[in-house]
Length: 485
Ligand SMILES: O=P(O)(O)OC[C@H]1O[C@H](OP(=O)(O)OP(=O)(O)O)[C@H](O)[C@@H]1O
Ligand SMILES: NC(=O)CC[C@H](N)C(=O)O
Ligand code: SF4
Ligand SMILES: [Mg+2]
Image (cartoon, protein in one colour):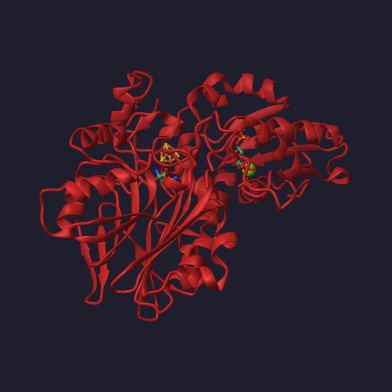
């Protein structure tokens, strides 16, 4: 089935979710549940691979987990005590079945399935080299490069082959791999994307977020550390540190938007961090008003924090339909425009005649804020102020998130003052980069050794961007530097 999106002229880029379990009867059923809890990370496609000790089974499909993996027959096709799964939003390679994960290949070492969250910033470069040496690719996904590098490695043992492959890769990867040697989970040396380890009875589980552990009834053990590789098999669990140690740079946007608020990232409650951001915003950018109104759902905790800090009442002035997905990740501007209207509606009686402060997590293309501000004015709001729980998004992400190219990022094209005019707010303010760092419990950003990846706000990319360099487009990006742009 061809699922390439007809609306997509604007390359799709988003998050993904990975889940893996080893040592549990009907592992694929548990994986389906875990993927359900990670549905917010990718709604384009989902897939599960299982292993019964002798054979691998894979089912991959376009659409949501529930549509494809909630019936018994789907799970019956995926027998075995070990399984991995994936929810996808494409970052490299189109939205087509051939790119849906887990990707699988029969290697000389046996079957190898991989589920990847992140994006490889030298994938095209590596791919060209592999093509020249005779590799035949089945997909256009960056993830497939990993399989070919493992397949062609000159090392013998599988683990060494994987390590050899990953050492050639730059960018972001949190991986769950299923092999005859067991479940192998790896987080890139900077730990850009999250990955956690849990336990359910005798089984071990790996997942992108702690919420997936909660949902399947597992206990959280710990996060998989940046640069750590975990091997889980019948002998137990083993941790390996194959890479040279680096200062971790986890994605700060996970705290702002991507992760579910009921997840924990590096020991911090995402919900609490979002509330802290609201508090910081209230301190940094106060304004007199009657109501604080979140742009639901992702603006909710920050609005609550803003309200608690400012003493201005929190009210639900916008009601959201739950039957429309995230607009940020809808392909194509026409569909995005439509879905913002379908998704949010004004609570008219509440906002009429009021001075309101709208709180949202981010402005990307400006689609949501433009519509919502107009909606509030149409509903009779006297003043509309907007506060944003992230700094202006001025740069694209190359590490597995849907930020469109720079020309479509409102903040890359306009100053905050012009954005204020454009979306027709009475005032507009974004949290500062240091305010955001304070919200995650730090004193501020250490410009000489930044504690997070914040490149979409600062332009300071923590890895080389070889594919961008090869395309001749790097002069606009500041590479390998710590300094905020
Ligand atoms: O400036 P834009 O291009 O409109 O993108 C930014 C908006 O997109 C996201 O919301 P979305 O409605 O996609 O998802 P949510 O329900 O998780 O808030 C985000 O929370 C902002 O509201
Ligand atoms: N968002 C992601 O993490 C995507 C993973 C991978 N780069 C893909 O495009 O399939
Ligand atoms: S560029 Fe932004 S979204 Fe991408 S990993 Fe860095 S902080 Fe996260
Ligand atoms: Mg939103």
